[in-house]
Image (spheres, rainbow, N blue to C red):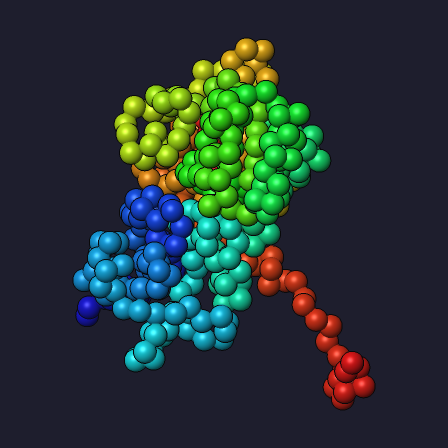
Length: 379
Ligand SMILES: Nc1ncnc2c1ncn2[C@@H]1O[C@H](COP(=O)(O)OP(=O)(O)O)[C@@H](O)[C@H]1O
Ligand SMILES: [Mg+2]
């Protein structure tokens, strides 16, 4: 007699990668590492690439490398109809594919900002990380700061400039900025990552070019006081009872942690754990958890701080709801240093996504009317 082990049903995890943002390439590296981290005894990874043009592509079994999926994969669409198979061939050839859960590994616009999360909600799919609201808030540095202030979490003083105002009356905007800040200031688009479109402005002469550059990337621009600070980051994991990791420190080798320092040149140092006093660590972790709640986040976030070199004042700089996920990225590294290895981290994130999904499923969206009363209530 031959005994056949009952076939285990693997959870099909759609790993969304690429995307239309400037962080397309970063996403590929993060997604490849997430796929490697999915326990093959529990999960089947289904890589779903989004090209820079916005095409959705899925690889055949033979296409294992992510760039290959983007280049030669089959064009598909994600069905917003929750009763359909999630992934449908664009040309309607053959059947669709079932996906049980999605892990979006896309940074920036159309990935981290709530737009993809909205589509996944419509499709009725569980997904890793923040929902529509938290993602949208996390992506907007101006709205984030307003909510952080309301939660009594210190942020670097800033001024929000609308692109239309800058274009309509640059003199008035310059006056407003100079009344509030001394140079140097940081000028950055309100909703972008990877330091794209960002300038450290040292004098008046540099202000207009900086605002013009930021205007190319966003409708809203932040002008911030420049702080001379250590850059401390902490990872948060959880839903209603989030936990914070040990903090780490980024030591850029350039004037600030700009795009070149992040992705083009080696030399930036990651110190894990960061050298800090126990009281500082406690404060950073408390702010990180409070921020996670204040910004309506779920699943995961990397929370970045500035710790002033003189005086030791702490400011929350920003949150990242889909942090870098390569094997050398801060988010997973900090968890590793806090006792959660990479594979277990991915496992927990999927569990947390399922938990959010179960909670959503419990919520009613309409009242149930007794039969025959519908007509009378129609407006
Ligand atoms: N107000 C500031 N003072 C000093 N350095 C800053 C300030 N704002 C940004 N920076 C530098 O620029 C980097 C990127 O800025 P950040 O606001 O984190 O944008 P991004 O979302 O692109 O990462 C920071 O890591 C830091 O090195
Ligand atoms: Mg940053």
